[in-house]
Image 1 (cartoon, rainbow, N blue to C red):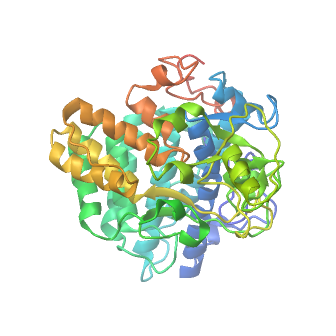
Image 2: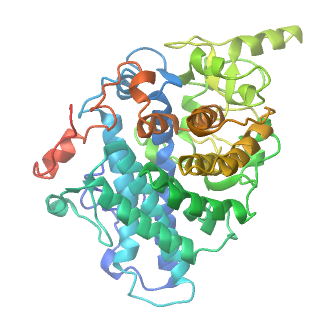
Length: 480
């Protein structure tokens, strides 16, 4: 359960701190519109910690290996890569605590939502509802049934009052929050990174697909597509560069900055995208890129899935030896160190580059995470329509994505089209943290992921220490 009681001030590393130093008197805080606005910024803030969700969503899948310096580098990630993680995995516990920290901040606003009236409060509450839904969706994807706290912060002493509830109940609350957000939010926002109507609708569509509610998902995703507020970015090769952030394809983008404020003892404190540095080339010297820690390295099987003319291959996967050879022809030397599980490939979407905004390329890289892209919306809508037997619409959406990649249109139907759409999701979204959950929700994980055990690895274990702190009222997930 969430044990972070900090709401406005920065959280410390230990989310069990019951009385952080300099904590604002929370009962007397909401006395102005500015107070609510500051609290909303705090709700947004934990989005930065989802860099961990993104990395693990790839490492746990068949797209990448953990990598790093050696087999003992970030053991929690290594265990997940090998499907040997347990309930004492510190990285799994971080994910649990950081998502509940975000929820607690959202609930702080809702707890005092009726204290003060002012123009525009509905917009603050609608954005806050989206964020709570986002954090809960992450939790239920990873853990299934989870404790559900609504409109109330949960203190350390109250955790044992919150049993785990069914995933269906969590999804129902997520839908409620997203329906409210969709109805209240505008199509565009004046400040980059703020939640919009389209973001709320798109996340709702994904949540519905995860539940197998394909007809409902098709309806809501069609509305996003028909709004004409989004389109595919013309050039996939520049889509993930900093200068192309918040473009027409970005439905919801998590904003990062190069402001200092992190260390390896408090990675969630970083204002930068930690995933970028961790995915960089170890010991790198040369042009174009900055060095990194060589985690989350793509495997040959992923590379082999791309057709030779697929314009997404090079922007998605960086081939270090090919790059080195190309630079050598120009008389430029490139050197690097092979990390653990070296494949020769790196996540090109999120890699530290020379000239981009950072103070520390490993901790304060300002590259945003494209959390919901329009391409994802099109492919989800194609999946939903295919499931409902409307292959003509499914093909229209699918072929828009393929055309941008330089690929010919397909004409498949039925279950064959379903497989084509699923494959297209892998090629389009590789490196973005979605793959593991796509495999799980479609029943393909056991066949694709080495070491994956059906009936166990669909979910991650509830952290053992959290179960103890809750008075052992929560059952562990099966197999752990």
